[in-house]
Amino acid sequence: MKKQLVQLISQEEIAVTVNRLAKELDRDYENRSLLLVGILKGSFIFLADLVRKINTTICNIEFISISSYGASTVTSGQATIIMGLPKEKVMGQDVIVVEDIVDTGITTATVLNYLKNYDPASLRLCTLLNKPARRQIPVTIDYLGFTVPDCFIVGYGIDFNQEYRQLPAIYALEE
Image (cartoon, rainbow, N blue to C red; front, top):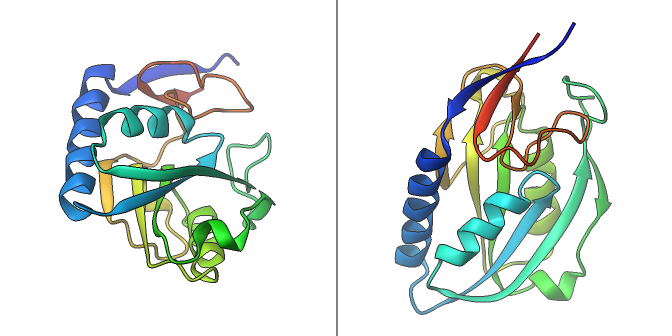
């Protein structure tokens, strides 16, 4: 059966929200320097748009690659860090983890715990999407874009089996 896309969040709504999140980060980190850590691959478009709107000094942008879904629409229940960071990149820095979506919390909690062990000056989470209906592990979201219903989300960097990332808006993928 062919999958259908149902738009949940428009490109314009995303742009307004990215601007708001950048202003919140600028307010909270005025006269400081940020290390932004994007979780690959889903966050790369959100991170790129966010970086262009932040006025606060960004000392570095890094990426972590982690997997918990594979080619499925259901998490495996375990997150594995595929590509990490050297400790010296994180130690003593104000770190903002930039995530596309917090779903079960498994991936996000794994990344936050991994980075916490590297002694950052501060560690906060900025996510475009939150899907609390599927949460298995509690995660504190410091900067939140949208809360979405319990459906499979694609677009704006978020994929299903590496497809749909290029879509400019957020969609529910339905059968």
